[in-house]
Amino acid sequence: MPDWVILVAGIILSLSTIPVIYRMVAGPTILDRSVGADMLMVFVLLALALFTAATHSTFAIVGMFAITALGFIGTMAFARFVSREETSQAKDKSDGVKQL
View 1 (tube, one colour):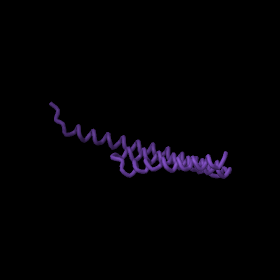
View 2 (cartoon, one colour):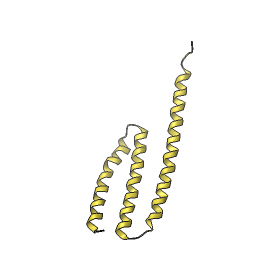
View 3 (cartoon, one colour):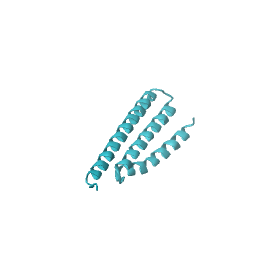
View 4 (cartoon, one colour):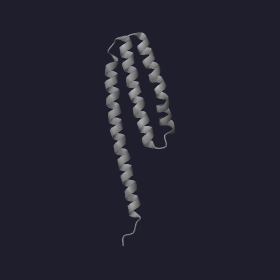
């Protein structure tokens, strides 16, 4: 692969991280911040893939698998946390309602 293709892909990748970082910082809800963190993880994986393509080495592939597994486990844990929080808030609201 020509070097200029990798350079252009790296520039596009770095420019596309700007809105993701903005969403992580200014996201109005915690879910927006979580989606931004997941997207940033994807961009890190893409950067490692570009590095692997540029250097023709394979040692970054193990790191890519580790980051992918960690991101998946983190997303599942966050989803369970948010679902429990929403359930407890709904239960608290229903406790205050009097039954006739």
